[in-house]
Structures are given as structure tokens and as C-alpha cells.
Length: 574
Image 1 (cartoon, one colour):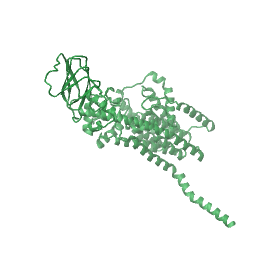
Image 2 (cartoon, rainbow, N blue to C red):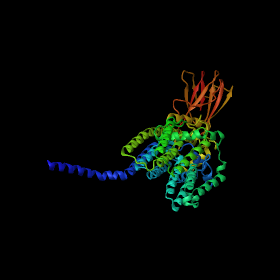
Image 3 (tube, rainbow, N blue to C red):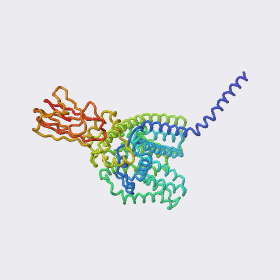
Image 4 (tube, helix red, strand yellow):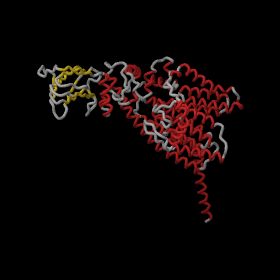
């Protein structure tokens, strides 16, 4: 009996020893493994979400308006922002890969998001439990509430400054001269990439003020050099940009800042409620912000003291939101999906500072892990909604551009797609025909071919017909009293009145439409559209002749169709 007990006890002890190496490896390498799995999962999600998307909205300003190779192409502001590095990246990708596909820009954008997540992981891991650092990185990677930042490459004016800014903070942690030099370089990269770099410049300035007694004044160059570069840019180019600074915005700034933090908290918790492409309110974020403030007060009561490294991050976050508040216009609400990503990073960095040195039990880490998973689920749903909307915009964009290319031989150089009544999407308002053709000739075209357009969904085909009618353009000229129904009928077709409007096949050239005496006749056309006739004409009164002119274009395989509605006979002579 004793022997059996000893054998049983020995087996249990041996089993425990067998598990010990695995548990030790998990404790040591598990957080990094979780980070790698998160990056791999994000790569799959981003690939699926960004598949077959094309260029969108402000990206066209880079593609069309900065084709020159002079200094202005890189230094002119976009809106009021400095965008030297984003423009350089766009130009590099265009020269290497062309403009026919958006995939290279999508890959480059994903890499900047990955850089943000990895650097966030490194920063947080130095302050709290590594498992919490991995969770913070996962929340950022799958922050679907901020889907424009992840799926729209133009928004690297946010992600590059964030990655460079976190890198700067990590380098300042070294507290040595080499770290300061590299921190200055990182801050310069952030400043040249977007206005968000200003916020990290303020963070560097606060860090200097907190340390100047112990480390001296010489390291002031860390923020002064990038600051002087920004000032030089502003004096040379930035001051010409439109600004929306107003007293009302300044007075409303505190409310804007609080809503900004609230929207980011709600998004991190998976409770973001901002609809796709429309303003929203941080309905869940506001109570979460109140709760966070209460937890902060409770923590200070239990363990007073705030780490010195907390203040630079707080200064950067406040600068970020104040700059956004001062330049507010409709469409730049604090809860906008574009602004959530950076605010979420600041919140995670501040949380890491406030939790520095706090020991979490296994149960506490498990609860945090469950909360993280529950937050990621709704965020993925929001990312899908954003992706679906961008996919719709892609279809409209490729269809509208196809219409421009089909009409290229006769279109006016300054023809643009600013009218949403004819264009499928308002995101193409800055496209001008001559500039677009110049870029397409140089780097390739993202538009549908005529064959692809004919197979596209119904709405893009309908809008393509509308664009073609004005881009070619189609024209009609009506003459009263010249009706001659008994004249020569060669190549003519008589349309008799009936319950259903008749359709006549037309090709480029001039078509004569003779309306017999009676009431007015209605003429509508279609080409790629099916089931509807989106192109209206002025029609014609009774006893008249209308000359319809259709210029030749680059899609002769696809004819036009004329629908005639009249109470009397109408003859169409092609």
C-alpha cells in the first residue's frame, strides 16, 4: 500500500514537472506570441477588408494635384496639414507600382498600423504586465470603430506620426545623448508626416521641462529642431492654407475635448456608436469617461502619486484634441471615426503610466482578456460596415472613371465630377478630366474597362450613362414646323403610339427625330444601364424635328438606346 502511494505521488510530481517548462515558456514568451498571433490575424482581416478597394476621396488630391517633381508638390499643405512624408510615400508607390491598383498603398498602410501596435506593446510592457501590453496592441489592431484609419491609406498622416511619436517616447526613456538624438529624428519624422506630430512635439517639450534640472538645457534641440522645421514650413507654405479657427470653436473646446476622450473610450470598449460616414455621439463613452475619472480618483486615494512620464502623454493628448477643436467644421466631430485611433493610443499610453508597478493576479488578467475579446467582436463588425461602404464607393469610382475614359476624345479638359447628381459618389469632386488623364497615362488607370462596366452593378452603370451624356456631350437641336413625315424614309423607323414606350437602337452620329402633329414627345436614353433610361432630354413639341447628336467615343461596341414616349407617331432616322 505504501509502495502504491509513493508511486502515485511520484507520478503526480513527475506530471507537474512535465508541465513546468511549458508554463515557464508561456509566462516568458506568451505575450509576444499573442502579439504575433494578433498581427497575423490583423493581416488576414486587413487583406479581406481591403481587397479590391480603390483610391478614395482626398487621395485623389495627392494623385492628381501633386504630379510635378518640384518642391511645392511635397510642401504645399493639404487643407491646413503638413504632409511631406505621406506625399513622398504616395509618389514612391506610384513610380514603382502604378495607379491601376490600390493594393500597394493598402499594404503600406497596414505596415504603419502594425508599427503603431508593436511600439505600443513595447511601451506598455515596460510599465505593466506583458499580457496587458499584448491586449492593448490587440485592441489597437482591431479597432474597427476607427476603420478609416485602417482601411484608407490616405490616413497615414495619423499612423506615421503615432508610430514615430511612440518611438520618440521610448527613446526618451533611455535618458542618454544617443537616445535624445534618435528621439529628435523620430519627432522630425512625425512632424513632417502630419499635424499630429505637433502634439508629440509638445510632449517632447514637457519631457524636457521635467528633466532639465537633472539633464541640463542642451537637449532642448530634441523638440526645437523639429519645431523650427515646422515653423519654416508654415512661413513658407502652411500660412496660405485655409483655417477654421474661430472664437466659437475655442469656447466650445472643453466640451469637444471631453467628447473626444469619451468616444475613444467607447470605441476601445467595443461600444462605439458612430454610423458609417455620418456624425455620431459618444453615447456609451460619456459614462465610461465618468467611470474612468472615478477610478483615477480612487486610485490616487489608495496610492497617491502620478509618474513623471504621464505628463508628456497627457500634454500630447490635450494638444491633439484642442487643435481639432479649434479647427472644427461639420464633418470633424469629436466622435468622428477618423479621430478615434490616435485618441485610443493616448488613452492606452496614459493607462499604462497610471498602472505602472501594479501587480495583476491571474484572475485579473483573465478578466482583462475576456473584456478585450468582447471589445474586439463589435469592433470587427464596425470594420465590416466601413469596408462595405468603401466597397460601394469603389464600384462607383471605377464606373465614373470609366465614363470619363470612354468620352476622352471629346470631353472638355476642365470637366469634373463635382456634381453628385451625375456622379455615383461625392468623393470624386476633385477629379478634373485633364489631370486625371495625365495621371492615368503616366501610371495606369483604376477605372473599369467598358466590358467590366457593362457587368457592374446597376447603379454605377446608370451614373456612367449620366456622366457620358455630359462628358461627350450628347446634344439636341429642335426645329419647329419642319415636320415632313412623308419624306424619304431611308434608315428610318416609325414609332407608333402605344401603352408601352418604344426603344430604338442608336449609334454615334446624328439622328433625326420627327414628331407628328399633336402633343409633346418625351425622349430618354440609356447605354450601360438596363431597365431604366437615366438620361433625360428636353423632348420636343408636336410637329417638329429634333437633331440628336452622339459623338464617337471609345466604346463603340455598346450602342445607345432611345426611348420615345408620344401620343402620335414619331419617326427616327439614323
